[in-house]
Amino acid sequence: MGAIFPGLKKIGTYLLLIFLFAGVAANAQKNKNQSREQLENQRLLILEEIKRTQEQLTLLRKDKKASLSELQALQTKLGARQQLIQNINKEISIIEENINLTNRDVMVLKTQLDTLKSNTPKWSGTRIKTAHLRI
Image 1 (tube, rainbow, N blue to C red):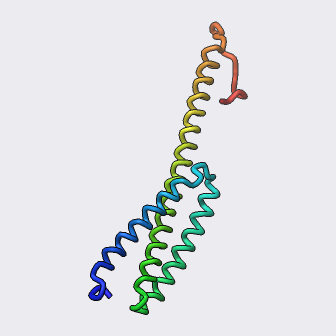
Image 2 (cartoon, rainbow, N blue to C red):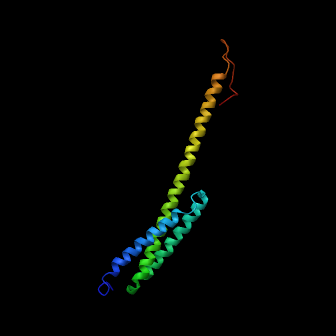
């Protein structure tokens, strides 16, 4: 087909890039505040879509005349993989945010503990047994 239509390959490449960037832009506009469970569900759906697309690619490769369909299947697979990467990045962001919140809580608790320790009265020479008061 390339010999008959020499510009078709170049046009196909441009179309691939246009679809790719359009898909990325559309995904960027989706809800940014998704829960981790939603992201996990989406990840599983995307992995299923990738598997289906791979099966389609296997079937299409058997037929040399199906090059346009193969291109579309590759675009779908690429888009699904990009969505998967975006979901993984969102999960990482959620985990990092949870780590930061936990670290902040630890710092607050340490400060409170230090305050409590400094406000504890000092007994002159006598030590109170505090075995039952473990911190």
